[in-house]
Amino acid sequence: MKKKKIYLLFGSFGLLMLLVTLIAADHIDSPSVANTSVDIADFFAFEGDNPDNTVFVATMQGPLTPGAVTENAIFDEDVLVEFNIDKTGDFVEDLVIQAIRRDSIMYFFGPSVVDPADAGLNSKIYVDDFVGQVEISGTDETITASANGMTFFAGPRRDPFYFDFNQFNQVVSGNAAPEGFLPPAQASDFFINLNVLAVSVEVPNSMLGDAPPHVAGAVGIDGLPNAYNVWVTTKRKQ
Amino acid sequence: MRIIDIKLVGLALCMGLFFVQCVDDDDNGNVIEQATCDDGIQNGDEEGIDCGGSCVPCFEGLDFSGTYTQQDIMGRPGINTVFSGSDDVKNNFNTSVVSDRASFQPIFQATLEAYHDVYGAALGVSLDYEPNILGLDAATFTTVLAQFDALQVAPNAPTTYYDGTNVLTGRNLSDDVIDISLTLMFGGTDGTRFDGNNGTPQLTSDGVGPGDRDFNLPFPYLETPVMQ
Image 1 (tube, rainbow over the protein chains, first blue to last red):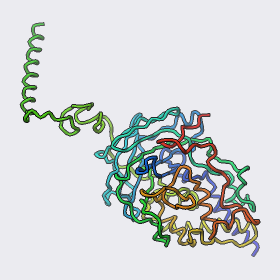
Image 2 (image 1 turned 30 degrees about the vertical axis):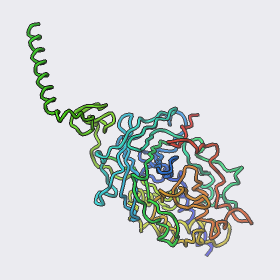
Image 3 (image 1 turned 90 degrees about the vertical axis):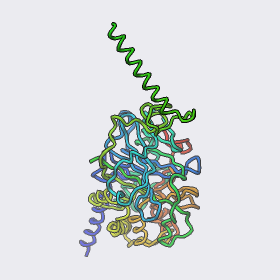
Image 4 (image 1 turned 135 degrees about the vertical axis):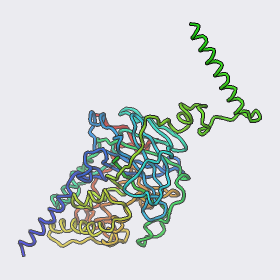
């Protein structure tokens, strides 16, 4: 019995040790994308300074250390960044906003209506829905551009994500028992001085249309406001 | 020289005819139409015919063709990294569509329970997940995580992952998604099950906040990179 318990214990540790890779919101979340130009670090969606607008932010290729690594980080011309918006509650994208680099410019397309037959793992660029472009910022500048009611940015930024990643690894491996995470005075933010490549787009809600009933209602949590379901994907040219 | 002169004269005549022709075509009661992006001529601030300037860019030389295939995907923070468990599952998650994730739910639930098992083993007690502050049991919670993995963003309400009042209406740069997620995983029905008090482990907060980050900047709302 004792052996079995020990085996189970180590079995659990084994499973959890597999989790102990560089984990963050989505930073380097799987072996096939880690340290590549398709790797999504994080995703944010929030109300803009103008409350009639929604902002989408994708951060990528993190963590980038200060200096040359950040200076040399570039968006891949073969990688399409796609903000997906489900307006019906079926978690299939109804609208997409696409971004892709050509030379020193990030080009934006959309919001494009997605035919259900075209939804999913493969995309084409909705060239006819070109909506704006912005010169990609360097490390010491902030270049934004506005067109057709939308505002655009692409370039290196400080990682906004904060997390005591090292202690998390200790916690999930059982090494931090029984205390768990550290008191604020001892905790350390792994990402405090690291960078990412960011793509931001601010879009008037009027261009997105009505939002569906909040999905929380499906699990008995009622009273939440109507909300789009949104996610970001990176897609590589085949 | 004479030949060139003759050519120039001929060219001038041709141009004259051309412009006359144009004038004839454009004569519609002396109404001068403004430059538009679909009139078939380069005018206004266009850099080419109906492109550049305030029109669509001149895509000449730019190739936006082809098919692009999904490599990575993200909705809510930390889902794939925290709950998928193995490398194969993580890779599969990243190449799946949000609407077809039922197969991930039992994996997520097993991982959630495994986290509790490890801590229970370390403490020498038996620990199981308890329904969280949203009232979700393990199966329902992991169903929400696996099958509805998107940020909900409300166009007509304050956006936040959770701010004490509003919940799941977006994700701000400043939101402490780690503490919120840990609370949902380990906080039990009142959010304080393992909050470090009364001899319990601290599993509901990692103890770090945004530090000296500035989240009150105008668009693009993110700080310039740290360069030293």
